[in-house]
Length: 180
Image (cartoon, rainbow, N blue to C red; front, side, top):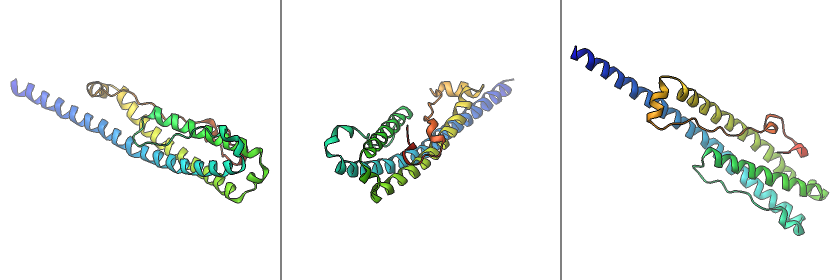
């Protein structure tokens, strides 16, 4: 009888460790996939910064328009990453609003190249966000499923927040249809 109880305890222990390992692996995959978002945001930041420099050259008296572009830091939470994305979206919208007042800026090849680059970076960012959200979804499904939820509870794992996907990101963004 004691052997049977020890066998049951051993099986439960092995099961618990394997579930713990699976949940931890999901966290690693999420962190790895989030690196793609971080890289896309860094590239997007650099492009936005270049667009701001060009726009400032044309609109020197509109300095107040160029308020903030949050610099991406590594290891942001999902909420902080969403905040950075919203801030960058506002900055892009402000740049385009200024550009509409300066036809020579709009026709500037350098500005047009940067605008096309932002569109490509938005596509890369959207793809990276979908991958992260897919991984988060897989983890969240495990966390809420019995009996994995028991192990998740002991690991203090809660459902993770998703990265926001804007309706505009789902569309093909080009030119001044860019409204986030």
